[in-house]
Length: 284
Image 1 (cartoon, rainbow, N blue to C red):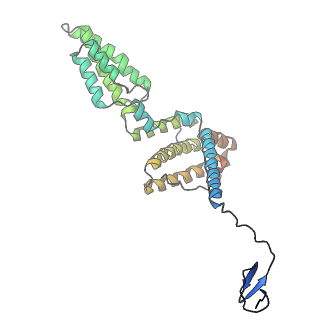
Image 2: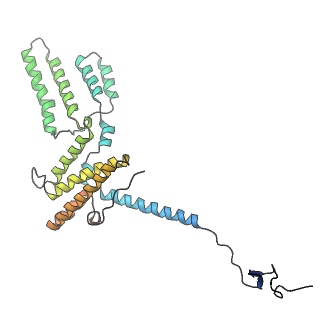
Image 3: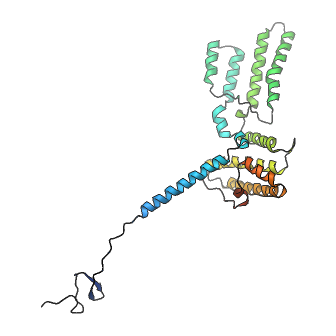
């Protein structure tokens, strides 16, 4: 016996019907095609947009920090990698020059092999270049002349050579390249005092204190990029950010012109000082 799909209750039909409970109801509604899942493409586009925004922000920050004061600061890692010379190499070179056991050709070849020389003209312990020049250039000539007069049996050339070698040893000892990272920070603080000091010996004005804290903040930034699990210094870094912001807000109340000039020289923006100070992110 033939029966249509909607004659009896409970009959199941596959003829363009939709099953509802135990009944089959005829329908002519068009079933749309299954939507393609574009979640993966959307995530990739979102990540690309975030990477581009981060790159633009990094480029903007680099241009912002391209100031005369920040460019004059010395970075310990670059300084030590490019121009450091070990005390052992200095002692060997000075010994060879003083004893004159090697020939001139071998001595020149040895000096050419020393690719890193402490001759940047920067010195630790607040030593000025004029003081080093007096010790390494003027004093050796006077010492060589006095030795030549007192000791008639010693040739003047040997006395001058020995004085020059001793002066070179002194220059290498006080060179900033042969100091530690703490001495580099002190050198940068001296640069901040010279740049932002309103008078000679000024170390307490708002601009000077903000500049000194900027030097310490930059030093901790370089340290935290390498040592990402140093939580104690991360806390010290955040405290320095708040101290600098507080000092710059005080400077704004005192003089608006000095405030904006200081921000420009330190490579900062108004939002970095008056906005929310976000803790530094860990570098993976």
